[in-house]
Structure formats: structure tokens, C-alpha cells
Image (tube, rainbow, N blue to C red; front, top):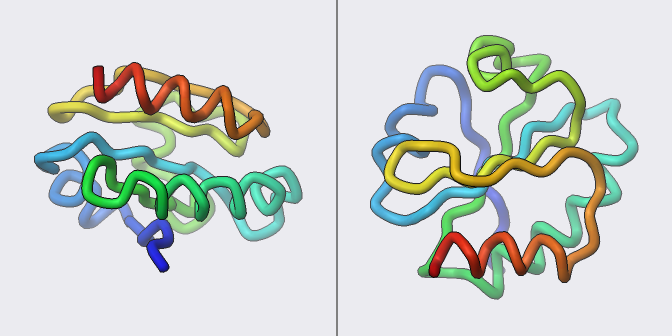
Length: 108
């Protein structure tokens, strides 16, 4: 089963910005209840989009630099990167259908 991989400030550029495929980054924290609510949806989507889009999770408490660089003020925040640039951003828990629309738009 494919699940989002952890990413940190130290490897964000390599895993996200230099990735050949689009990457959905889940900015989250262990204490965040909405983050826990959206996690199973992201697990399902990671499975559905295996080979098309990479899914990663960045703990904002452990990696504040990257969260600050992208203006993450609330969590969960989901940012989709394509060719090293953010192309879509969603804040808060969103329905699976809305997430899929954003992913499909990214794949174009």
C-alpha cells in the first residue's frame, strides 16, 4: 500500500522541487485533529495515483523553515507542486472529490 512519505526541510528540495512527477505536500502536525481526519483520504489518493503523483507529509513543528517559506499559516495545508513550483493550494479538510479535481487538473 502506498502512503505519503515523510519529507523534511533538509530533503524538501530533492524530494519535492526536483521531482520529475507532481508532488502533493501535506503540511501537518501530530497534535492537529483535522490533519488526522484528512490522512486516510490522502492515503487512498496516494494509492490511486501511484506512479502519477508523489505524496509527502511535512511536519510543520519539526520543519518550520519550509512551512514558513510557503506561507503555511493553518494546517492541514495541501500544496501541489509541479516542475518545482506550487500550482495548487488547499487549506483545511476537503472532500476526496475536491482533492481529486485538483490532482486531475495538475495532471492536465
